[in-house]
Image (cartoon, rainbow, N blue to C red; front, side, top):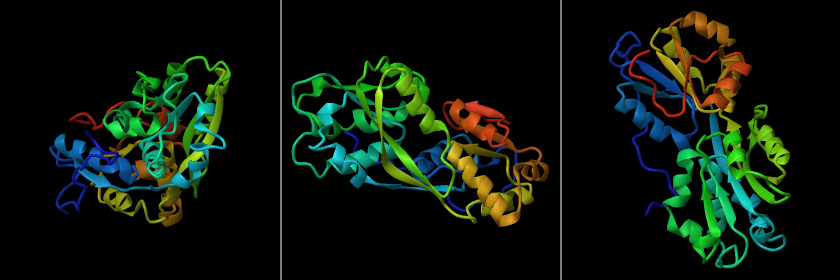
Amino acid sequence: MMTMQNPTYPFPGPLSPTTTATTCSNPTVAFTTPPNYAARLSHLLTLKGFNPLWCPTLVTHPTPHSLKPYLSPPPTLESFSAIAFTSRAAITSLSTAIADFTEPLLSPHGHTFILAALGKDSELIVNDDSFIARFCQNPNRIRVLVPPIATPSGLVHALGLGLGRRVLCLVPTVVGLDEPAVVPNFVRELEEKGWDPVRVSAYETRWKGRECGKELVEKCERGELGAVVFTSTAEVDGLLKSLREMVGWDWEIVRKTCPDLVVAAHGPVTAAGAESLGVKVDLCRWRMPLPKSF
């Protein structure tokens, strides 16, 4: 049985100063994801022969206290029909919140209650028997829903018609950056499907600061950067803000400084968000890492 902690993988360490993007067998790939995804992505990139360079532009902080009013009366979770998770951080934050309750959150009898999560994030639910048990003593009342297309729109489609039912949407509060359109669009699509979405902050996403892009800039200036991977629109925005405030760069300067740089996005939502910010995406993949060659 898996606990609610992420699997343990080695985090990226310092790269050898002799490693360059021109070393075809081991190009350097920078990635900007927060810590909750970084270890796994670094591990996968290493398995494929890349030198991972972790340059997080965001940090996340769970806010389980903001969830507790929705988990015990008044109001009661029974007034909802589903919980929609948009990230692993949201699942982890809820897990922390419900650990303080001594009784299950739902009665053994009632309508089917949906826990909806994206892709591999759902493993934090299905691989942890205690997570379901803390919701309800009757596991048959709980349905874990994983859409075949791991995007917020895919989640809306999988949930189907809402028919006025309430869905608790566990989403981030963005601090230090403009909120990407992903969550507002998700809430709007739920409303269009007849759901009554209740948006609740499960965690904070904060900009890591003006120096967060420093190593990426250094590698770029030395011609040692083969690719950069983004897993969310906010990461892109965070890097661009760092570049502007630290060295006065925009993305056009990055491209001129490192003309062979490959930009990869994890999924079409991130790709669209990056391009809306002026960052042209060369590769869009559902799963990381990149192909063996550029």
